[in-house]
Image (cartoon, rainbow, N blue to C red; front, side, top):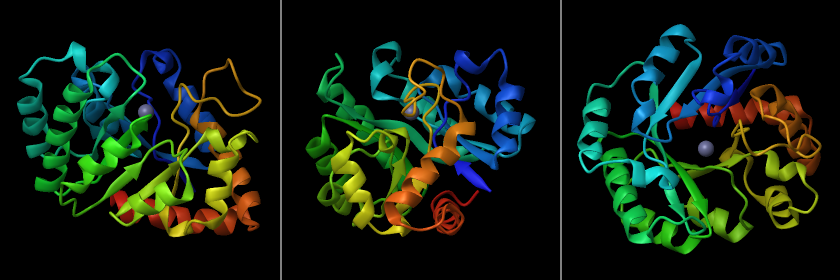
Length: 254
Ligand SMILES: [Zn+2]
């Protein structure tokens, strides 16, 4: 059994054929999914998806790309949702910082801080998006006491950067990026980092695996990521996945 710990199954790209997407996923052993919300308009739909598919869990949060679409009351709204502890909620996210988009960094940090405060207060792990803002992200996260830690999703950093987050109770969401040979730094880091910090994710519908560019990404491709990681570590995929599933249970308490 494998868990896709970051897959946007609530987006319109999957609306037409979600049952088939999940069936293809199950057929290759990927039987559990974690769907992180990207904005407030998705928060009410996710509990319904969990009702329909009990192995589909979710996180509630605000992705830095879409903050301009939100209004100030949204943070109180987020807390109201979390307070109710709805069934299937296992984390806060997807939140974080992105230095490559046209959203003011001060605004991104404000929203991130509030979400980290909620993760701390309600003792939930946090799912972090990080692009071209590594230092700001690390400094912001360090200001909070996060009892459940979280995930550095779509990990594509160096060994040293990973170790700094692992020291704060974080795990690494490992996805399609490692299927590209040019991702040398990340692939090398993953040969040395502790397997106890590894989680698997596709991040569909985007982040295609090598050889699958241009097509929609799907949870059914997760075993290909596991295989690449197993090759990098020189172990069998089965053995490696046993540890990774323990990690996922420990992080998210499904
Ligand atoms: Zn994502």
